Length: 121
Image (cartoon, rainbow, N blue to C red):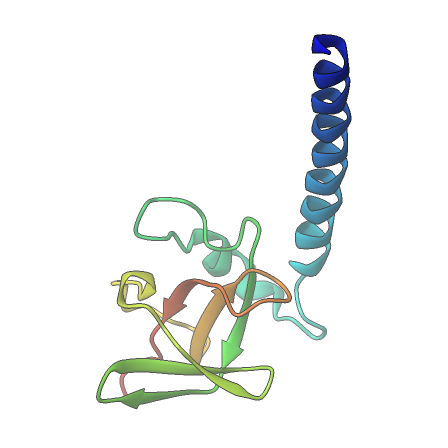
């Protein structure tokens, strides 16, 4: 009985490792720069840090984004849908050489890791 339980746990653990490795590879592959990316902005994108200190672009997809301000805060358009930006994901930094709002999100999802406000007009 104990041997069977250990065998089942071992198979689950191996399968979990394969699933985690597969998902990790998808995230890294999806975090590539967009076509026609401006290489002069690469250093700025890499400098973005989430409030907890982690890099916004390490495993994220950072892009210029259409945004709007509502009574509840910022919203960004992701895959044709308006998504609310959690306040704790809005970066305090004010420098933004892109000229647009920028969102960093987990590729293929609406999970926002960082949001950089557009420059003041």
